[in-house]
Image (cartoon, rainbow, N blue to C red; front, side, top):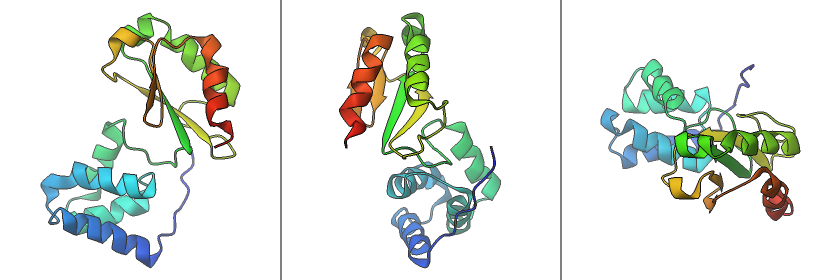
Length: 162
């Protein structure tokens, strides 16, 4: 996947600096800073990571390592309605792979991609802690339990006009 260069505006850099300052520029607050920055911008491109590294006085490699290690963080923009399919053990055993394949087929995208209109993106999670409802799908903050491939079209339809 080729990397897209992002041009940060001066106000964006100031916003990142303000977030870092709100955590007293402490290197130990890196994960909290990244959460807040991602919540603000929607994702963490390399240019944003560079500012965070400079403000917290930590190596860029450490910031990148954290961003790529934790599945919550994303270096590419997510869709307006991010779809996350749990592929933890309980969900996997109960058919999460078939549900995931149906989302990929309906949206014509792969895991980690966003639809051309920017509405949907697909990612996988390890566990959302709702194993009794397996397989579980989240769209934004809304959780769907006992999802079957046949339910995928209706779930997508809920968000198409939003």
